[in-house]
Length: 424
Image (cartoon, rainbow, N blue to C red; front, side, top):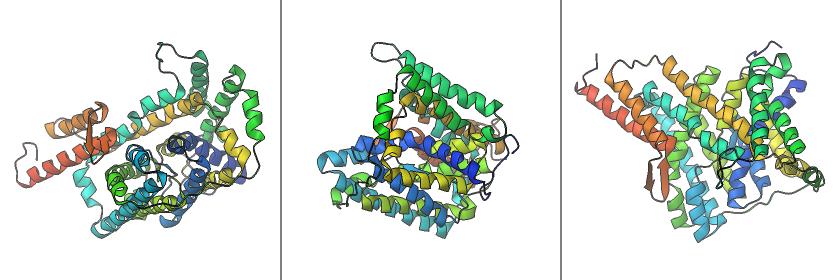
């Protein structure tokens, strides 16, 4: 295999390459995806199971043309936490299902009216910074997960920094220096190197590893049934704004990476429906809502491996891990500095993809319109300003996307009336 050879969406790969590439995707999504059920205090096994099933359904619905991994959505944390504190997790599940159904309904609207409106409400001058914010606003999360931010005493654990540095170093230099087979699995190699460093430094004890390996071979995910409560549904439903914006942004940045317009083929309506349908079935069995994952988008951007077969392999591994006790237990021993070290680079890759949208769109900043639009979107997204609507807080990329859409739509209307000073 040539160094950095592109493996396209429909390409098949030999088993000897498929397994490590699939493991690479699964490890990349694992930390963030398992964190959501841990916060909700439910068994991660059912989430791993539904992430895998949801991803396979996504491929089926999108006709195997849209490479994406469905992981646990963070958008629901705040409203679901409020619902759980008042009623319980099963009531939150009912809200998840209704949001999934709403997303399916939006997909039919997109199918009916098309996607031309996206170019009007999110031109390159707005979409570029919005996509960049997907990665940039997560930079702090990566550093926090890695444990390299100063604590209350102003100090950083040297072990955390060493593990983080080794992981990130292998990812960065491996991406530049590795050749042939190793050129497509730098993330997996970096995770292994970071994990070995964690064991050597004592951040992960050998007894912890042995205890994980001694877990019961076969475990059963803890399924739960939803309960539908009108007030809890009303509290969670506004998350649809966040989920829709996030999904469109992910599909656009993935389109740029694989150099195919996924909004047209297989179509935004298909990917939206697949995302919503996955959330619906997850809610009915007790898992958390799913969404396309930035970590896996970053892996594709870094390795140039876009094969559906590889991501499907990761989904199958996730399903297997949900039933095999030692595998799930061992993966959960991967320390934060390793996950953070990988995320540090992957989130940056997503940010760079946003800049690429601006470059490819040949955005002209000599006039005031594009300069103003990009500036406002970046400032809103990075300033920390937030807007609360029905117990849902809009901030960061989502709020920036909404502001960008409103401004772009107003500029379009002004153009129609001939009011703008740079129309020509």
